[in-house]
Image 1 (cartoon, helix red, strand yellow):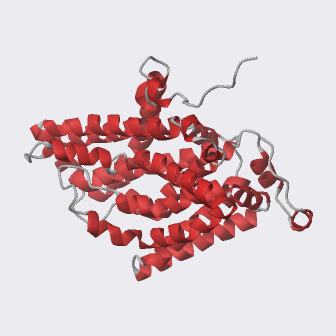
Image 2: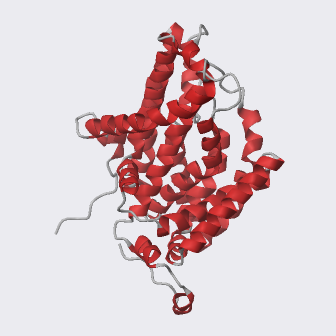
Image 3: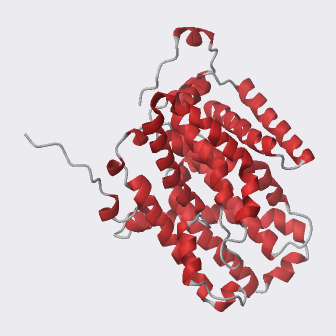
Length: 379
């Protein structure tokens, strides 16, 4: 895939690091898989840390919960930016040719949401609460819940598709209202808190509002992103990371201000751009992240089931009191020790399903995703 050339003046002024030029110009965009893989690993680490905090920890937050908090402004913004980056050409095609990105992904969301909620029909799994009602199940399918990222992808795609049709060359201007929506996203959380209550999974409309801008930025900002990668140096990468640390420190010191919360995600994207541009992609860590990044959907789907099973196992085996004797020590060991096995198991299960007749469970049924656009007339 050839990259668009920079303007002569910009090319003359760009003192790019050779690794950055190579990263931006790799035919298969290895940094895409590495970036997606890193985001998904961070998501799994977050959920393992959350499991430990909910089931074991009764005091101050353990190590990996704080680490997860430090990466919170990066995880989903980068993942959705890359998703938009990869959808740039698809949003210019008729919807009938992109059913896999809309109906296909939504069908995967609906299927796995129902399967995940099925556990609540077991009394022990819902803590003695009432079983889900048909209305609650229906609301969980219509609104984003546990698998909200799968709900978000088709919605974001449709928004980008509509903006492309309605705004044409001016579609970049839509970033302004989307950025305002992202800045105001924390205000939506209390407004939607009562839509679904425990033991049901909470509605994640605030997360949707916070991340639409990053997906859309990936759609309209592809050339700018690649141009920035070409100009990356190790110094610029280090400075971008320091800027992220500085904004994060300000955010922690002042509280979750709306402007800072949005700003730090933007700074995190710039920092990830520079780091992905200069870091090598042949080392073992990068290769492992690329392996995960090539199939993030199965990891996302199955790690939630695995973490739920681990949570139940902690309670059923009576390990919780043992772990609570040294809460901070086990909090530093357990989430990171489980991280690789959970990611690998999720990836392997996904590969097995994708290689079988059940692949529709992760891609959507063929009758739903097949193109509806008439083929060209045969000569």
